[in-house]
Structure formats: C-alpha cells, structure tokens
Image 1 (cartoon, protein in one colour):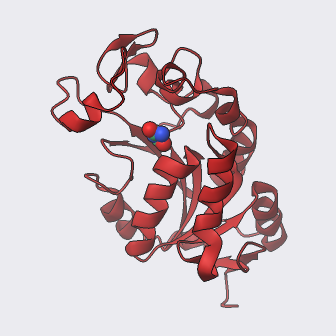
Image 2 (cartoon, rainbow, N blue to C red; image 1 turned 180 degrees about the horizontal axis):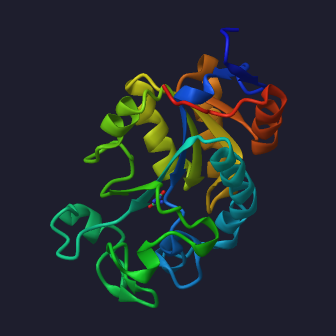
Length: 234
Ligand code: C5J
C-alpha cells in the first residue's frame, strides 16, 4: 500500500484511500426527507427508516471533522420561482402537495424554506460547503466537480439519503468522473428495506462497478488504527 494511505475492509475488496485526498459527502439530510410532515412523509413514506442514519452519521461527522477531512453537504431543492425545476419533476406523482406547494414545513423542496434545510442533528459548520442541487445527482448543474478537483480530492466517503435515489445517482456520476467512492451502509438510508439492500448491492457488484461498501465502524476503526489526520491537504 502506498505511503500515507489507509486501508479499510470493504466489499468487494479492501478500499484504500489517501486521507489528504478524501472528502466526506453528506447527501440531502434535509427535514423534507427526514421529518414528519415533510415531502418524504407526504409521499406516503415512513421517515423513521431514514432517521436511523442520523446517530452513526453524527459520530462519523464528528470524527472526520476532528481529523480535518473536507466535508461537503448537499441539499436537493429549487429556486423560489421554480425556474430550475423541470415541469416534468413538478408534475410527477400528481401530488396534492408537491414541489413548490406550501406544506407543514413551508414550500416543499424550495430553497430557504424550513423543510428544505438540513436537520439540526447534522447542521453544517460555518466553514463547510453546502451545495444546492436541482437534481438527484450532486454533480448535475452544480460546481461539485470543480470544488473537489481544486481540493485535490480523489476519493469520496458517501453518506446520506436516499440510497437508491440521490446517493446512487451521485455515486454513478462520481464514478464516471474518476472518483473512488466508499459508501457506508449504516450512514445511507432508504424508505424501502429492499431498495436499501439492492442499491448497495448494485454499487459493489461486478468487482465494484460503481464503488465500495462498508460500515462506519469499520471506517472509523481503520482511521483510528492509522492515526492519520489530514493535516495539510494536498
Ligand atoms: C429523493 C433524494 N428521494 N435525496 N431525493 O427524491 O434521494
């Protein structure tokens, strides 16, 4: 293993990463998806499944912050005039309270509304980037790729919700751009247990066709054993 790299047990095989070239991506941990009364619940989902992700993600975030990793949060949502929201996305589902409509937590998936923001438990620090994205993938119509390249990032630790939608789309986009993605199975969540399972299997199948999967305890154990803090990012 190259000097300075950390190796963590993962599927389909050990994942090696340089902590100075690795970022933590926290995808869409927004009230609209995680809290009662939000968009997710309006769609008929049980939000408690997603909320299980919060404690392990809090622990991971605290440790990766402590070690100096680059942390980037994303939020799915739209401008107040919905000019960045395709009409097809607004119409999809024929919802009585869909994107742009006023729900219990303000306008659904509209930037600036209470429901659009990140849950209190995972509040970004003032020096952490919060990237607003209009699509499911975090690279679509955003400057994420530019930010990562400017920081010399090669590997991503991917967390957030939902596993089969925004997490999977982002991992696929990242993979096509040459990033190596480690997805943490206890730090990503789905409303549907079967989608959680298959979305993770799709990532690690065929020799890791989109990336690697492990748990946050394994990652934190490997980080602690290596004793490496990012120090001077390259
Ligand atoms: C969804 C997301 N599920 N963040 N968004 O619509 O996965």
